[in-house]
Image (tube, rainbow, N blue to C red):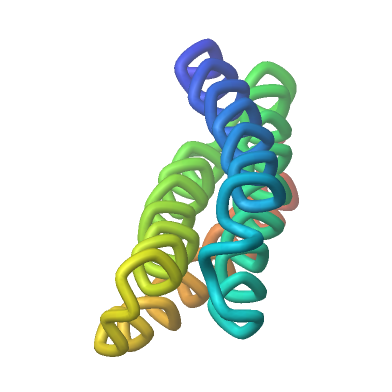
Amino acid sequence: MDKLFFIIGALSGALSVLLGAFGAHALRERLTEPFLNTFETGVRYEIYHALAILFVAFALTRWSSNLIGYAGWAFVVGTLLFSGSLYLLALTGTRWLGAITPLGGVAFIAGWILLAVGVWQSQ
């Protein structure tokens, strides 16, 4: 599973750089300032959690705990819900998507807690 999380983290990192460049160049003239800021927040949190997923891949090689794997999946789900909803909100203006964003935030928080507890409990 460490290899899978490493691949997911690396691809998410690449996607966040790609989307960041897209936002900075292609969207700057097309989106209002608030929607551009929303898009950039999605990019920022995706890159942070791409790195977190890479750390999960490393942690799985070092410590033995199912909670570490659950943390990785929480980061993946958090990225999809949090960043994904912000991208869609910024691009479409569909405001109800903002209601999904906090669910991604909860998944991020759960991931960090699961990671900490998983490492703490492992041998």
